[in-house]
Image 1 (spheres, one colour):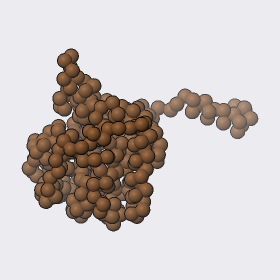
Image 2 (cartoon, rainbow, N blue to C red):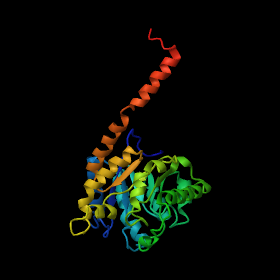
Image 3 (cartoon, helix red, strand yellow):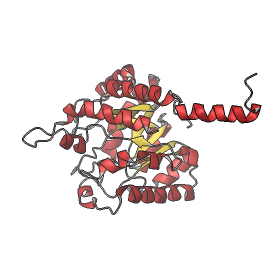
Image 4 (cartoon, rainbow, N blue to C red):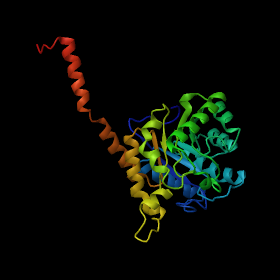
Length: 298
């Protein structure tokens, strides 16, 4: 994919939140200098690329003015690009995407899949930037009300196919497109697990797949204590790394995480796992060789 590092394993995208209200780490790296330093720390832990966002998409979050988002994101993009980082911009706004790409961002990660801004597909087509189209049904303040599926995997695949059709109509090339099943977005709880368990179906649709499970609510509920209280976000990193390993084993192109080191190890374990030949494949090769030589070993 143009501008994105190649690897023989699943990539790891580190999250750089430049927001005061992220569900996971809001305000910890809100100044440009702190955000750049944090991004470089994530690279040191094994991140292949960094996702810079200036607007929280946590459940219930309200939108920020576009100028505020630009003021938060662009200095951090500048600082990280200047230090050689591969940068993604996490935005649903075409104007933010365009400005970030002009400053060196190589990927646009749009949680709305283009539904939040009609101009987004045109920017993607014009710039040729790699683009993540995530499954999305509505903004953070209403998304929990939209968790209604007949078959969540089939419904998500169908709705993502509609996003792909829109991108193609706008002139976006298939090689620019990455798909994301949108864990946690209009999927408050149990709807997330079938998407992970049947991830090979989405991978099988032919586009690179990004998985963003990091610290999300469904992991908190899974790890709830005896009283039923969900585990807090920072206590979900072990489960996140486990999802990263399983997603990588299922063929995900990239995992998006807040805590990088555990997932960087996990994707390497998955790569080693996948590299072991299937004994059945060896048997088939032996049969083919016998057929070619007539069974002779001489």
